[in-house]
Length: 44
Image (cartoon, rainbow, N blue to C red; front, side, top):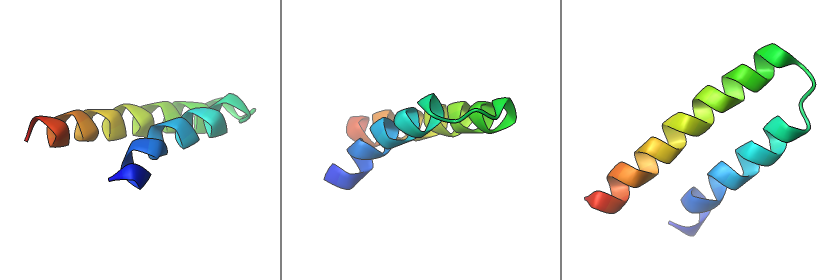
């Protein structure tokens, strides 16, 4: 579980240093999906 909770932090840092706007959008979308999945998992 610890690795799963660190994934959003890693994605946010990658997005921060990504210059390509299309890649930033993709990372933002993926980050939202991962955070949503983690919230659902914690509620389970």
